[in-house]
Length: 330
View 1 (cartoon, helix red, strand yellow):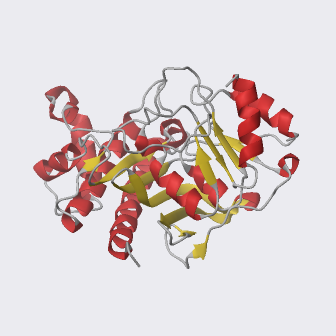
View 2 (cartoon, one colour):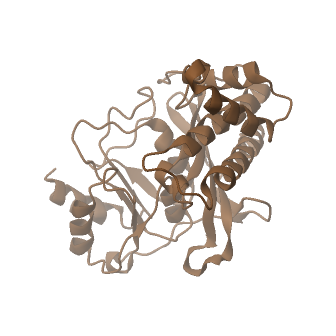
C-alpha cells in the first residue's frame, strides 16, 4: 500500500507518545490535588510527546518538516529548570538514548509553517488539555499532509473505551488509523488485532447520537442544542475532549460531531482536525465547515478559510448542515 512505511512509523511514534502521556498522568495527576490553574503535568506531556514523535519521524524521514504546537524556548529559560528536567526525564523513560540537547532540538523541529506545497507532518502532542488533567479523554494526533491534502491520520486515544456502550468494562485505550483510499481501522492501543472502522448508517437524524466538546469555550453548546432539537435528537450529547470525537464518529459510536464557532474571528488549527478528518473520511463519513466548505489544510498552520466544523456519518450531512446554517443564520 502507498503509505505502509509512513503508517508504521506514525503508529510507532503515536503509541510511544501515548506511553509517555500515561506515565505523566500516573506520576503527576492520578491521586493528586492540582492547584487551580496548574497545567504543569500536561505541559510536561505536551513537550515530551512532541520530542518523541519528532525524534522518531526525523529518524525515519529526515527531510520531512513538522508542524507542532511547541518550541523549546521556554525550556531553555533557567526559571523553568524543573519543568525541563521533568520533560527530559519523561522522554528518556521512553527513548533512553536521548540527551538534553536531543530532546530540546526535537521539540524545536515543530516550527514548520505548513502551506499548500510539499510534504509535512502535523502534530497535536496532547489534544484535550483539560481532559488530560481530568484523567478523561485526550489524544495524540498525527497527520501527514502532502500538497495541502491530509493523506494519513493516526489518533492515539489512551482513555477511550474499546466499546463506548460498555464503558471501561470493555477495556480502554484505542489507536485509529486512516490512509488515503485505504480505509480506516482501529485496534487496542496496547496491542491486539486491527478492525475496520466504519461510520454508522443512520439516515434518521432523530436516531442519531451527537458528540461535542466538554468545554463551552470550544463550541457553542447552546446553539448545538438547538440544532439537536431541530433534528429531533432527544438523547443528551456525548461530551468529551479532543479528536476522540472524530474517532467516535469513525467507529459509529456517534453519528454527528459539531464544533460550532464561539466567535467569528476564531481560527481552528490544522493539528486539531487533520488526523481526525482523514480517519472519518476513510470510515465513510463527511467533514465540512459550518458553511459546507471542505476543510483547507493548505493555508498554513490555521484553517483560515474555514469556520467551525461539522462531522457526520455522511448520510445525515446535508440535513445537519441545513440545521446548522439555519441556527447560525448562514
